[in-house]
Amino acid sequence: MRISQSIIKDMWKYKNDLLCGLVFRNKWIHGQFGKPSADMKLGIYFEYIATGALPKGDKVPEPVFLRDGETLSKPYQVVHEQVKVFNRLKADFGIDIKKIGHKAKHGNIEGTTDIVASWEMVFREENLVKYGIANNPENLVIIDLKYTGLIDDRKNPLGWHTDTLKFKEGLILQPKTYIALYYMIMGYKLPFFFWIFDNKKPGNNKIIHVEIPMSEIDEHIEWLKKAEDGIQAEIDKGLEPKPEYYRCLACEFNEFCPHKQVLPDIINIQI
Ligand code: SF4
Image (cartoon, rainbow, N blue to C red; front, top):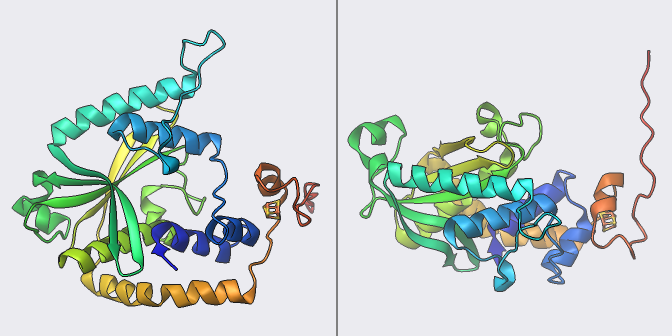
């Protein structure tokens, strides 16, 4: 089994009741990845316009137009505004992109990074100390782009509120995994940055450096080596359906699924 950041995150979601086991099975055992949601499509389009990265299947993402067939719908207009912001800040920060959609692989562990860039500014002496960054020969960093409606969401386990981010295991798994993977391949640590863009408010974005001590990266490397066994054990136990009304409503497999929840729960409040 190939162990990627995506399968690890999906297993984490499954174990935390955020993903149905049948969807996990369809995706990772039967290779049925399903259709992206409207928000996912926006993110895919943003990345394509910003970096030229194509999604799985290499199909060029199309925007949504208004009825006249020429005017971009509002959410896609915001994408273009945000890409202008990305390009301006990228130039002002001196971020020199070296690789887009780089497939990194070590043994059966793999991952595809949005951007590997040379970013001289973060390796200046004052920043090395400030951000706990160690130098590397080509000033390389990993940048992961996010295009989201949850940029300041505190409660959602997949929301990007700055102060709560470090407690959100499902999100921190990604920097841990990529830093560990590149460390195994290159022998040194690449700093990891999330660059998060709001999918509603043009101009609203933030860059977050995720500082992880080497001791935790070492532990994560050991954890990754055992991840295949852990995921296989869950599969062998039997992946459970986790129906929820809204989840099933949006699920691509709902037409034939005998486990789907067709009625919403009635909420009880006590006065
Ligand atoms: S319809 Fe519901 S229970 Fe069935 S696979 Fe989809 S999410 Fe799971």
